[in-house]
Amino acid sequence: MRDLVGEELGLNGRIYEAAVRYLHAKGWLLHVPMKRTIVAIDINFAESLVTMSSVLSNTKSGQKVPCIGTETRIWNNITEIIPDAKSFHKEKLEILSHVLMFMGVMELRYLREKKSDPMFCYSTIKSIGELPVDLTDFIKSTNKDTILIEREYSFLYSSCKNVLSIIVSRSIRFARPVVIGPDWCVFQNGAAQTTLYIRGEQCLRLETRCYMPAQKRGCIDDETQFHMQEYAFNVFSLFTDIIDFVIGRLKLLAIFTEKVPPNMVNCSIGCIHNWGLSDDDYRQTLCTLCGQCCENGRNCPFNGLEGEYQHQCGCDTVVTGCEDCGICQECADFMWSIESYLRPNLEVASYGKLRSSQYISLNATTYDEVEFTNLGVDQAPICLKGSDQAGIITKMFPSSATELPSLESLEQHMKQLETSVYMNTKLMSFNQGDTVKIKLELIKRDPKTVVQMEEDMHLEITPVYFTCICREVTIWHDTGILVYTSQSTQVPVGQFISASPLTPECNSFSFEIISPGDHSYIAIGVCPKRYQKDRQPGWNSGSYGYHADDGGIFAGMGFASEHGETCTLGDVMKCEVDFDNQELLFYKNGKMLKPKILVPLALAQVLLKKNITSLSRKGNLELKNSFHCVSL
Image 1 (cartoon, rainbow, N blue to C red):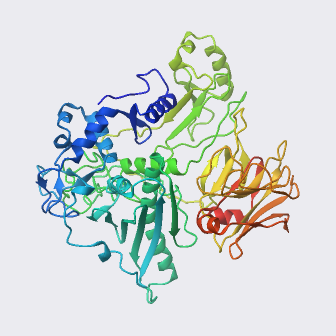
Image 2 (cartoon, one colour):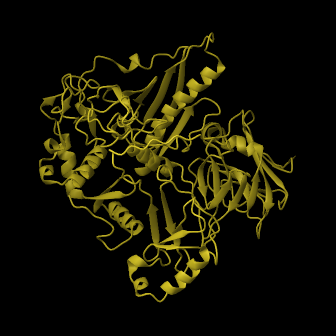
């Protein structure tokens, strides 16, 4: 296996990925998605991987892997599957393990009693032996004392079995497998149990259950029920993120329907995380999510062997999990890469004569990476500024990092760089079309040095507008103002799509135009959750929109089917869904426009009740309470 890296080809990452995808489409290479990039594999080598992983092992699992049958065929390590892997270095072995996962090979954990016991074994869906339990034991009719949250994916062309093995391999990292069958599996996360199973040929069903007494008495009240629903929904969202990530990276076509508690929104905002060091006897050094060592991860020889106390690794490390949620830094980084892929929140910063138009807040935990693309013809500087540094900025690129006392001195510094010989080299310049990525890394502290800090923290509660897509626009959460902020000369369509679909309980949203821009290119409407970029609502099939500039009402096509009143400064545009009559209504300043849009029955079931989201475009908009409710 040969590593194809963009730098070796003399190309940037985007061109490398585009080239690999082109060769994949031609059948000359096979590409497999990884965390933030893709891996290119020779076709002949890929065929040999499929052949070797299809040969059943002679080793049986026995009692060492309780989640599979005792007659299941397993491999104890990757070299038993691929003999040539013995000569691979560590990095290439990790890539090979990732590629095998997409070939249907699952990595399972052994029950360990001592350090010499292996940590992992490998198997495939077709190698699963006879199980002592059946799927019906876990999906019996739900009683009144159970919270049930469910989603069903319908794949148009792909085989569910192939997708299931990849999802199982991903999910094992974040949940304890109870049982894995040939076409179903069950996971446990605390008090919540999640079942994944194939129904029919093309349907994959996900169900999360959690016990909640229906009879409220004593300390069990409505608040208890809400928190239990929220708990089960968070576990459910963990699995839906993994499934959606796999579907998205593999470019599969799937439609889903779901039944979730009302007012629950899956978003990327969660624990901010606070990791540290501790020499306390009862310190928690096992990740509450993956169950592995918080310092060394899967490389720790004590994984599966608890220390003196529960949730403590046997290696006696002083590196702890997050003080609030208990997860390790590796899990947080992996989860954030999934969440940022599924729910991107893009912001654009530009360089003016004296100051930037806006700042992007970074931290080394959740928002630790930002990517810049220079769309102009000038050398645009990228700078960092500490929150506690008055006026001092650090110019990171182009050329070498330089600390400057103010933004005024930055302008002089950039003029001096124009004549520098270093600016002529490709790696030191930032020309039009170039992309630069900045990533923050936590400083590695000496585990022997423990610093205890105590301070009073007062959290200020402010409104947050949750979105699944935020392209070319910026939302100010404290004021509720949405602004079109694209710096592209192509003037792309700005999109602000809510994270939560419209429901019969929350069936409308609106905004007030406080700055119409040059041409009032503003639109309101509904669309599928994964809506194509650079498209206004109503232009694509399955979307509907009301456009302010010409008053046009668009119904899934590039021209208006009807025309209403135009909108400008001070006007309030509103969109409402009548679920009973399956109608879509648009309003201007409280006055309903005619005609009403009759949504076809099939689309009403798939889109209006499940996947309709709100979208607005271009200009400065003040979001009113109705839109705020949809976003939440």
